[in-house]
Length: 185
Ligand SMILES: Cc1cc2nc3c(=O)[nH]c(=O)nc-3n(C[C@H](O)[C@H](O)[C@H](O)COP(=O)(O)O)c2cc1C
Image 1 (cartoon, helix red, strand yellow):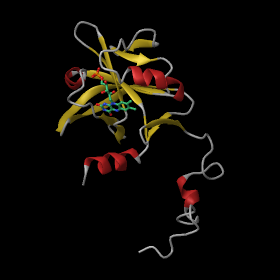
Image 2: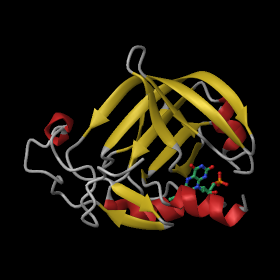
Image 3: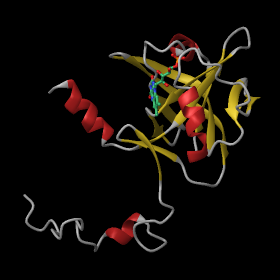
């Protein structure tokens, strides 16, 4: 497998965009744009995110007892680029407040304040698992990262509301090219 195919395969998996934040011993705020975030467990409530070892914020995030994950909206795309720029003045006029000792973005679609639960080495990244202590949730749609571009979701679900997963049971398997998947191996 060549590196370009690997990148393109991963680029075909859409994700949300978050900013992971923490505060160091001197009270200075640190943060990094992260798409490698996902839920892990409901009970206990665990999430994980993956900072690159090469990121300036990596060691602080890895050692932090607490951090926050702030889920971004489409309006936050400039902020996402700022937090993806090493050496940028990231927190200036960005609308963060301190909660649980860590920076939380007021206008985030959701913010999760976490206590560090586990830390793993994973190639050129770390996997940081956090137990969620508190959440702030707002209404709206997320910023999406797909094929190396920021995107917006359409507000419309693919099936008429309520559009829950069980409503898909009797639908054709594929509907993009007229093949219903019945001949698939
Ligand atoms: C949409 C997007 C998603 C990103 N996701 C990650 C990620 O999951 N993990 C990571 O380490 N860096 C990710 N980055 C890159 C970091 O945000 C970037 O390297 C940043 O400069 C690191 O900041 P620092 O070096 O000041 O700590 C992402 C960048 C963008 C634009």
